[in-house]
Image 1 (cartoon, rainbow, N blue to C red):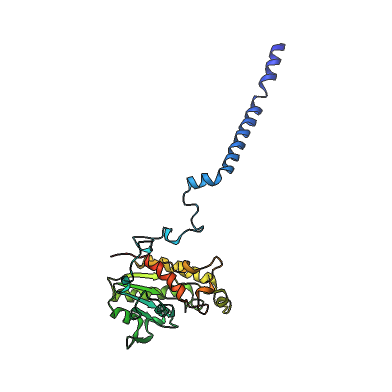
Image 2: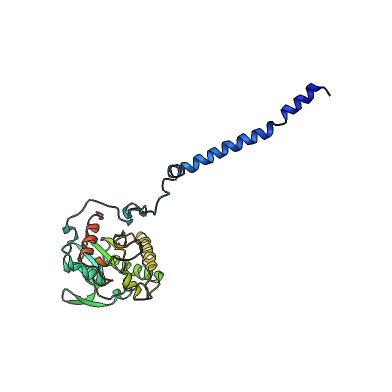
Length: 266
C-alpha cells in the first residue's frame, strides 16, 4: 500500500463523528432558544393556554346557542326589573335591602330547599301559595332563579341539579316566553363553613359549575354571582355578610351592579 493511500484514510475517518458533534451542538442551541422564549412561543401557538388563570368570568367561552354565561353588556336602568320575578330562598328575600327591585317582585322563602320550593307555601301579596305559582301569576318577562344554599352539604350535587331542572321546567311551562336567568349561589364565610362539617368549599364550586351546564341545557342564561364574592381561599368575605351565610346591603349592591351589566334582550 502506498503512503498516499494511507494518508488518505487517516483524513476521511473523522468525518462521521464531526457531523454528529455539529448536529448535537445545533440541537442544543435550538433547545436553549425554545426554553428562553418558551412563554412567547407557547402563547403564539396555543393562544388559549392561559385560560383559568385570573380570567374575567365574562370572557369564558361557555355559551352554546346563545345560552349560558352572560357576557358584559351596557348597564340597564332599574326599570328593567319592573317585569322581572326573582325566585329563591332567603338570599332572594334579602334583596329587599336594595332599591333595585320592588319587594312585590321577590318570591323567596326563607329556609326553602330546591326540592321544597315546588310545594312549600308562603304569603305572597296577601295570598298563601308557592313561590313558583306566585311568580308565574305576575306574568313576568324575566325570571331570575337563585336556589341551593339550603341544600348544599345536605344533598348530593347531582340530586340538587336534578331538582333544579324540575323547578326550571315548571317555571318554563307556566312562562314559556320569559327570559330565564339562573344565578350561581354565593360562598359562605370561613367561620360559617367551619361551624358545620357538612359544608365544603368544593361543594359550591362543583354545584355552580353544574348549574352553568344546566343553564345551557335548559336554554337559560347564567349569572356567575359566585365569582363576585369568593376569595382565593373559597370563602365569602366577612365584610359582605350579616351572619356568615346571608349577604348584607354592600353585597347586594355589588350583585345588582353586576346583574345590570349582564343582561340580554328579546
